[in-house]
Length: 184
Image 1 (cartoon, rainbow, N blue to C red):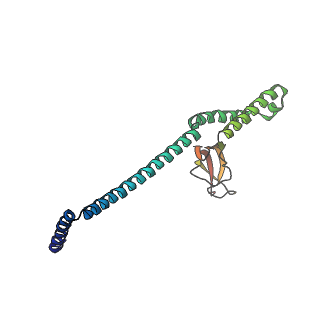
Image 2: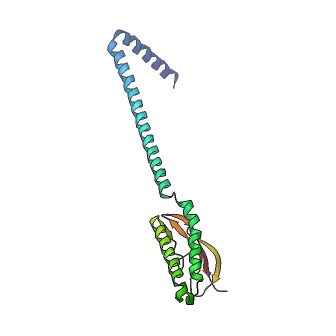
Image 3: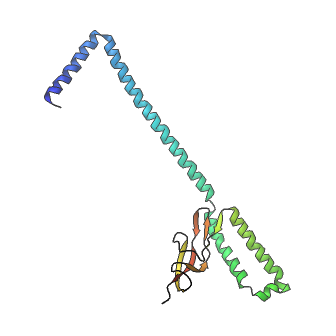
């Protein structure tokens, strides 16, 4: 501010104060303007508080929903080893023993247990990751080795060492895979 404008503002304030003493409506007008400014400030603060409260509520609802949706994650990871062992056991049974009448009941029971486990996984949103023939996706697959292959494009999964699983839209366990590379 220049010196001249400071003097003018000071004179305006003094003149307004003197006029307000002589005319109560000017003082009342000033008081109304002050109250309107306070009201506008208070409205803005209330709107900000309401928006913040709504954001906190939404965040809490999302966290509660996520907790409910993914509560079984640790348990599911532990049960995956049971599913792996059951699959290995079924794969290890020779074909002639599967047809043998003495073992047919055991094999049927193990297969039924495997189907039931898959059904329980499905009910809780746990699904097996399809890996063979897919391109390597580091968000779902973990490459354990490269295998020379003339049949598959480099980066294509040609072997699955261990199945991977998703729980709804989150990775539960990556698939351990072998990836094709150009033959030497």
